[in-house]
Length: 488
Ligand SMILES: [Zn+2]
Image: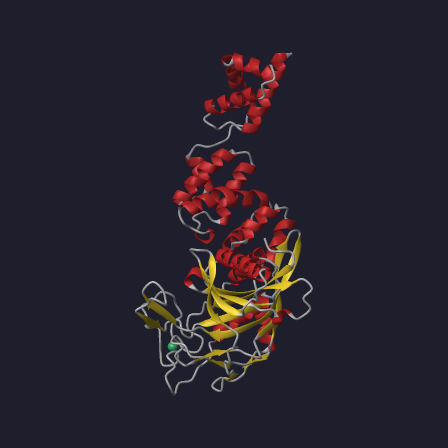
């Protein structure tokens, strides 16, 4: 555990690749997994004499993201050249946004017990991605050589920079999870951390008790490119322990960049940051300032979907338990499915309970999401209607749902085909109740002697006799009546 003498200070920088058809400044296809260097042209290869042309759709997706993060969108922003030398950067500069990012001052709400804490967003800017180096060998140090793949060079990115508002690894995990959920609702990115379409750098420092200086001046360690939300949490936990141990031994924390070794669960030093990088930013002369029209911004704002926070509120208002709400809201296709059922039914509890149990099981077995479900929202509501009307029992409904999944046919078709009609008529069941009680005299005696479990056995016998078609409610009632009557 960290000594109370320090407060943990974490800020995150998240890069998100935008899901455009083409790259940010050229018409090359933006897709993951193609053969190396097949998606390149003179613009993204950085050949002389070419000019970048800004991708309109990338701006649209970026602005959507900025708005969903509650940022102020600048009507005039600009692009700058960030200069550095690295083999994956053919122009030897990256087109980014420096002093005038398109979005600033937003926040992501995260749950903090019953309270909601706002993690502030300092800025969101647009930039182009670099290419990728594939090292031949186990790792960079032992590599025989490195191959450059420029398919990714020029892919549109947004970088989301938080304020150092997170006080633990857990808060960082929550922030990232919520950020990813929000962006998934907007459908602006694939958000696959393992494929690099969402990447996270964590800045971790410890603030000594009584420290009066600014957080910016604390020696900060940046852990680069961690490939999953879970690992971001692990890397931060490790860093907190490591830095606390150093401080408690009277050593100082070195400002540096560290990597994360997934297998060993440790961070390791990559390079010292004592001498600040000078990127020699200057305005990109080949691109005009980005001017966003007021009426266009209003249109984009109006096109935003209902976001996770609003969905949580709506579902809680409809009477769903918080745990179910949380599970549902995590996945935008689940919410879309549920949302569609609400145009056919008010019984959101029944829908969510079936969605999160049997529907989810059947979908998982087939490796499908709710957006690929063979049973549509309307189909599910129809099935639940048969239960609500007392025509079939919950147990029968499970069987019908299985069949619906296999065949894609409606509940009505299968209820009829399986000859399912729940027996709810007292007169049809009374005779059988009498027979069951007569056959199981000992069990009846047990029940009367106070053995509650004996009752369950009798219900089971009734269900067996009726091949599960008797209404459990009616059977319960008739059995109770008969047992009490005979006892008198
Ligand atoms: Zn290109």
